[in-house]
Length: 86
Figure 1: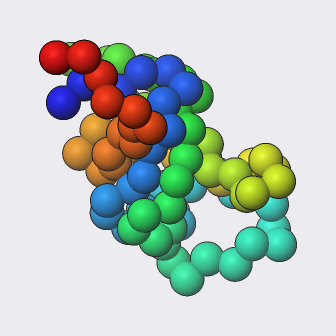
Figure 2 (figure 1 turned 90 degrees about the horizontal axis):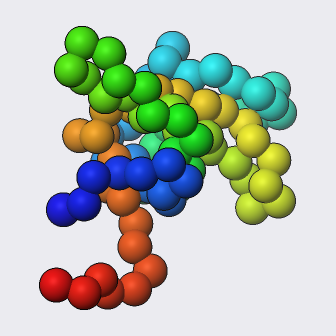
């Protein structure tokens, strides 16, 4: 599995609690978590104490950002749209 990179598209594999989010749009209602499968984009990578946090932006289909959160690599999968060479 490749290391997540800046601007990679990801999907979350664990619910992300609302208390870990910075919400940008009040019109969106959350039931306490972002749901598994929600797609986002890595917009920053932060390394500290040998741990890596990925700042992920979540946006609607019009490109309007509604939330951001720092995630660990274990909380998402990187989506790929084509096969990579071995």
